[in-house]
Picture 1: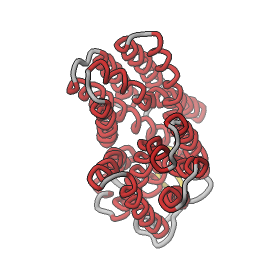
Picture 2: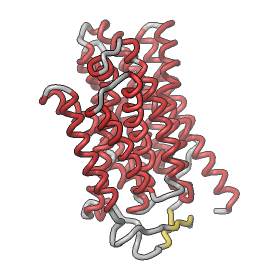
Picture 3: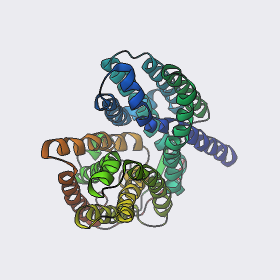
Picture 4: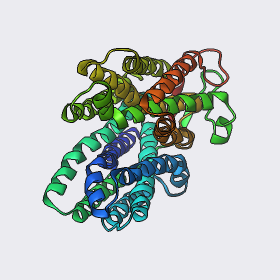
Length: 401
């Protein structure tokens, strides 16, 4: 492949990935629909919100199998299929007349479509830019985060001017067209040839799961997702319960979290191309520890509360941005979608563990203590972890065949 054609294809793939990720990020506007759906189905909001829990779980499971679909059908075809399924899921949600149908359509179908498109397009895009993996991850995952902000405005306007059913249909149509348009610009990344600095090669998933490093990385990722997702989910309640803020003032936590999350994605993503990625994860863990310790052990006022949740959101956003490149550092680029896919299951598991612990042991303070311990253990792991077969950090160089 000549250099000019190669550059054109990878920049088109990056643009297509950003468009697709922006549309896929729209699922994080789900909270806008809890109230209207509760009124329509005459069900409590907690039952309606369970659909988003199922969506998060389906997203993580789909991400773990996306690599197999890409191997068989190619990134473009799978992205087109994911866009179509996303549109169908939203349109069927428009006509959901009971909880089970809502959970199946909005939870399982939309979550599966989102997960297939999210990790596969991200991993493929990173493989096109082996020399700047951190920046490219930041661009793609940053677009996913911006999608939640952009579609918050779009969906708010749709709800204000149209019926609930038509809003879901238009949301599905817009998201489907964006995902499919982005997919048409994508190409499968060429196979990366790893130049071995010492004894490194591309590991298959079967080889990875036999390595302790793989499961230690998975444990660290699950902890980061558990801390970030749980705090994001209860931030408003923390403000009201621990800081005694008014509901309107506590709701500002949503904006603080969105800005900090996006900032973490961009800052730590760019930083990961300038220093060891495992050290960037260590830095993120320290920031999260500071935030969690502040929530637990200080006398909170509104300013300190916002700073604390911002630290946790910043760390979470940065971690999920750096991790694809970190996994490729440890186990190679060519099998990244599969190798990272299993680790990404920690996103779905982490999203529900915090809620389960809180419901079993009486509130979020117990969960915060558990997260604090897990973060401390994860920090120790990140400071001592080494790449497979090496006693010290190892540098990889990659070239395109």
